[in-house]
Length: 369
Length: 102
Image (cartoon, rainbow over all chains, first blue to last red; front, side, top):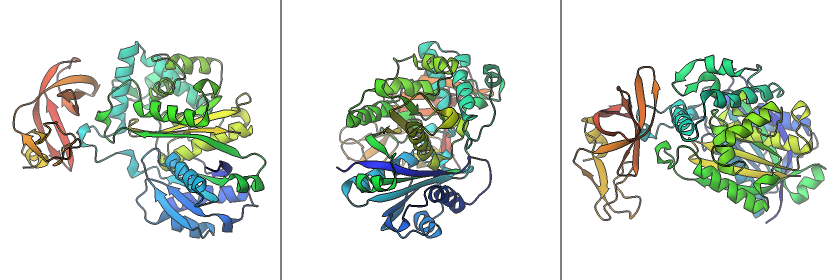
């Protein structure tokens, strides 16, 4: 299996603006090529589009707009982890020898149809994600004796970190009191505990080792991939305090990269809601069960950006199809030491965790210099 | 006799596999275990509240049947964890199921 590296990236700001999905796809793709004028578009074998948008034939549309005539062009949809699913597909095309260079672009509009899984009738009339997040929050607090104020720290931390991310949706910092006094959505969830849907796009270019080393001195290698889908419906989750798909995907990715969780220096985790960050920290093995919130709090107190340096989904915004790609770009920047005021201390190994529909499906990537 | 036809009439009947007797959820005409055909079991089912939260004046609960089937249902009185409940009202509105419990 040939090695696969990330050699270039581009992104758009994440906003609440009303733009066509095609324009958004082009925006980050164009940013990638402007930043990397030496990339030969004729050598791009595949263009993969990650989105939940209902528009048709988006990969060929993007290819034409960007002046690319790829061999392979198609879209990939898997709700909130469409982005990393697309990266895994690109990896597979390259490592199998079907392609040498693959462009992956993800984009979403603020009104994405991917926010609600209509099929999941087991949720009854409670299909909006705030309801599964409330159940997770209630169960997690009950199991480990965690308070709402403790969970609010995740939001405070990630908004603070997003302020250092010029492309983030959030431009403000908040206190625990601000989170506790924000709009009450349910007894167990406040508005500032939630990531927000938004308009945004992100692009990366992956290449085989031979091609990568022609274009850059700083390729970032994907050394581990783990994926697991346990179900589609939220109520099939056997645990409401941990994430089984995340645990399995994390173990697979670490095994493939021959790494332990203690060797991960920086990570982007899918904090769709405040409670998700400690649950993911625990499910990946960063901490013991019930101790994830202590890790988030300690990192916040030390202003250590190790977890969700770009501000996570809560601070950056959550344009579904772009999120996994944006998370990956952040880890690339961290490993290349180009993350400016978000830069963590000399990271060598990074991790991306991206999930869908109440953790019924998870993808974990391990990235290294 | 499909699950949804009965649900539209306000009846909550669970499908059971005719071959292996497994309760099948989400409702389907085929068993996800042995691939056999299913049939709706016409009886009143009791479920257990696994977790709940509250929005405005009503509660939303995870209710479990037969240690395997879980749905989200609405309750107007304050639930308790592990409380045994029954479906009091159910149906389909605009393609979405709804379940009320007492």
